[in-house]
Image (cartoon, rainbow over all chains, first blue to last red; front, top):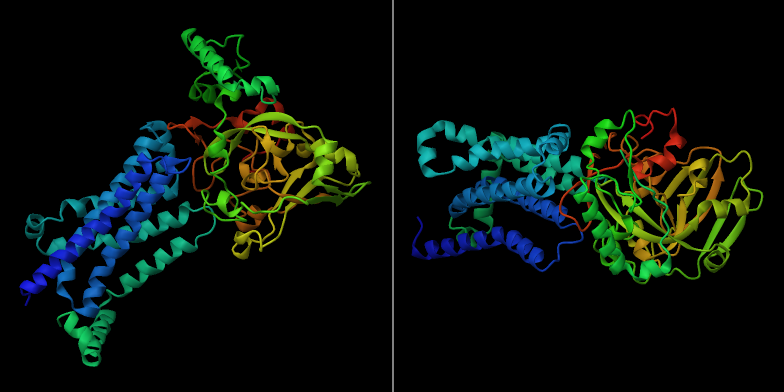
Length: 219
Length: 318
């Protein structure tokens, strides 16, 4: 049951998610307009939109396990918001790469995307997200029925490809991409039926031992 | 294939009148574009096509290049630095290296030489007259700059110590001082930074030791007080803040070779046809420009250095 109080609190929470998700873009535009985007602004913009995209992708993946553990229902619609923002940043990232960086030079792009595995997996991850973004509406959800869920499980593949894309593009030190990889793997493991059951057991445990927390999440 | 005379030395008065010079350069460029991209004798650039350079030539528009007019701004050269001894963040190197002590500084030159020696940085500045060399710098990350270095040929220093006949390679070493260089506290890489050249590469006139740029003393973020500059190789070969130079008989293993042997080789010659295993080296972004430029063979110094690698498989010897 979600009463008025929770509805307001939920609206505020959702607004906060929008603001946080838009922050990297606003910051990027600000730095760009104040000429603060390093001596190599196009590369900086590519890296920053890519980083925002992978952070949002991991957060999108984290929503379901978060719900499994805390049983906090209002968090679920955030998943779509985060997913769509992921797609927004992926699109900007891709457009900067082909438009600003390579000036839509087909010959150069062919060599850069199709001959280089890091670009190829990144491109594949982005392509996978495209139908997910298109079918994210309620209408499409109804139309696809059970297959909607199957289709949207493709985000698991996209996030693995995104991590590989990140690992392959760094010069040598792969520690940071590996942290993202670890997060993705853990969040995927959390979805395995046995693990999920164990996590909801954990929820009951939290409920019993920390009544305050339980009441906050409105169990 | 575009051939450029790279070792052009800008006299100080021309250098000081750079704005005028740039205008002239722009005029020359405009004139030659009007002339249908025919190389005009007014510019120092000449366009020749070689038997196997036809493909490259069709890619490379025959736009005359005037390096002096293309110099990257001092601001960018001193604030966009790859210097992992301080940080992997290019924008933070300048502030983190602000207090780096570059005087007193001694460079030990030894190994297979008849006259090994310790050179104080002031001895070096006194002994070897500096000249300006405007070179392209091509980073392995596919960006580039044009930098007016101040320096002297490395060969001058090597002649001073007299390499023996056993000496085949030169090994360079950067200062190891984690107190001053916070990046060296990170053990991901095997510090200190090591680089190497074959003796003939080291003796080549284009290879310089630099102590300044833009007419000023070198700043720490650019490798003060003394760094190597090898313009036809990827930037990481041009080792910074050198404390030791050894003449050796075996090929030295550089820091990057040790870190990632299948990606960074000993030679690391700029070559648009040999890609990095993970990204293309066919084009580059010149810092300050929006478009991409085709990368030139040996970074545009093919005429001067190609003979060093005659008969060598450049794909295998990356």
